[in-house]
Image (cartoon, rainbow, N blue to C red; front, side, top):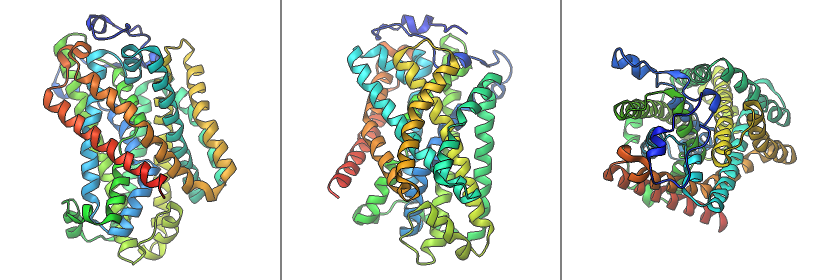
Length: 448
């Protein structure tokens, strides 16, 4: 379906007109009713937020939540809540950019900056996609290993098959992609609901854990883990992904229709990210109720956590559910990371290739390095790979957040849907905090 560029063409703040829309074969394919109840129109926008939420509960988040819960109990739940609020605000800006300009973040960078600058940003974005995929591929492989005993190296190769799943699901309709993701999210939620019931946490302490304490700042070890939780929450590929998949909705071109689309898209991502908070909090609560309460405060490894659950909880069901949830998280994350890779390549380069060829190329760019490094290091190198992926993402994050905040506050680029001043100030502050924390993380790692 050709892109309606009437709105985008009238905006004078861009160096170049918009090119081919993101995910062109599913662009504006999800029908939005022009009449009927508000509820019915809102339902058409449910979906993209849950694809984005997947990135906020990936294996990197698991590692930090397990470590935080094991070492400090429920105290870091406040940090999980704060980082989730940051994510909600930044993802709302992604929806605003998409609806307001008709561009995803990759297209916006290409159309706003000189070609050399856009090319450098593309390289950084591709590196971030590769780093993201390393974490997702390793997480999926660990899940396959824990659940079925499949060797880690073979599990990594199996994850490459998700590109064919995406091809098939998008061929029959983008709603099926969303249904697949939401179904796996439902499985994850049920798994953790049962595990927490088995672990029987102290609910009074859980509630208190959502209230911030001075100790988070005064205790260096707690501060370091808090930085890790925040740094692992906002991921660059999610910003590109959300600004692309919002445009699968066939909302109208008029200002009232676009305002309504922005409102419903923001509600969708906000609700979905609160669901992601429930999952992340559940991981931390599970670790606190089992490892911390049992005196095992040094647990940080996903495999170690899996092996210790059964004796601590007193049920063989708990580790099985843990492995199933991890596998579902890994599968979901690899699917959305592949789509983000496609949006990045298409948006920055404006390439003209068949849909299957674009997906295959973007998947190979990400999976080959991930598979190669995993095969080289083997099972004992998974922890190193997860840390490496988070360092790379921390380095790339400013190159995605800063342009996003710049574009959404520019009236020449977004017209009537420009972010209000208060929102730009809040988003700018959040961006500065996240960048500062990631710089500190990089400095800590560099200095040992």
